[in-house]
Structure formats: C-alpha cells, structure tokens
Length: 185
Image (tube, rainbow, N blue to C red; front, side, top):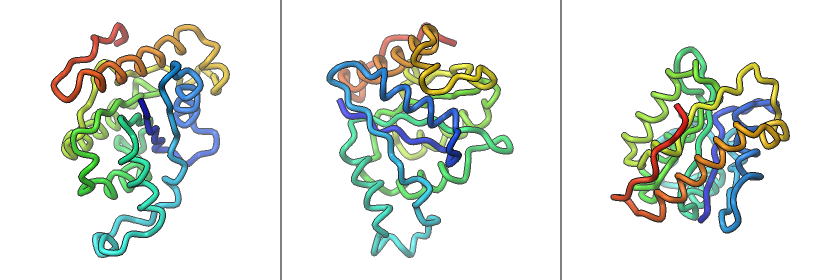
C-alpha cells in the first residue's frame, strides 16, 4: 500500500509535519508512506491555469494519483484550515483520481476541532472517502515531543500505528468496506 501524507503547515518546526514523519517511520512492512514536500511551492489556485498546469501542480497530481490513500495533518488558524492546505485541496477539487480515494485525518491538537471538521467536510465534498477509524486526534500540543519522541512514546506510537492499520484495512476492504472501529477518542 502506498500512502501520500500531506501537511497543512509550512513551519519548519511543525508538529503536524513531525507527526507525518513519525508515521512514515512507524509504517509497517509493505506500506510505503511518502510525504508531499511541495505544498509551499504550489501557486495560488487559479482556474485559468488548469489548461496548462504548472509543474508544481503536476507533481501534486502525480503523487495523489500514484497513492492508494492519503493522510492529512494540518493545524488550525482562526478556527479554520490553513491557507496552505486549502490551496492544495483547491488544486485537487476537479482531479478525478481524488474521487473515492481513502483518506485519514490526524489532528495533533484536540482543541483544533474547527479545522479538523472543516478539513473533513472539504474532503467529503471532494468525494474522498474519510476513514473514520484512521482519523484520530492525538494530543501532541504542549507535549514537547518531536518526531523521535512521538516514535518513542508508546501511546502516541500505538495511535499512529492504529491509524495506519485502519487506513490499510479500509483500502483492502474497498469503497464499501468498513475499517475496524478506533479504540481512541
């Protein structure tokens, strides 16, 4: 299984990006997790550019098309999603391979529920399939855990592994299958 992870943060010290890097390290054998590094390079969405897509958008489209599933982690700004993640999603709205794609949303701060709900709503509107058992809030804000700390912290690592396992199970079941229920709130 190939998973494409996308962070909605452009900060070098982003806890959301660290969470996705930890997920990459914790991916089980047989699962490839790639992190899309071009979010900050995408031009602002402009439908006039769709006839002759910029190279950065072609790279995004190729990465999404090649992935079996997507994994998102994004902070909340002003009770909403970041401009970076919204711009990324705007470039995927009319992209056919996005339809029916299984996706999971990891939330590094349970109090960031506005962005979490908005991101899920946007993905559902785009006809992505939200795998609820793989979409978790993991309380990392204030925990002072970097990528290595997340990997070494047993509860955090278990939550990440659960999310990846549930995403894998949902992909294996297909669009009408159900992933196992999440033991995490």
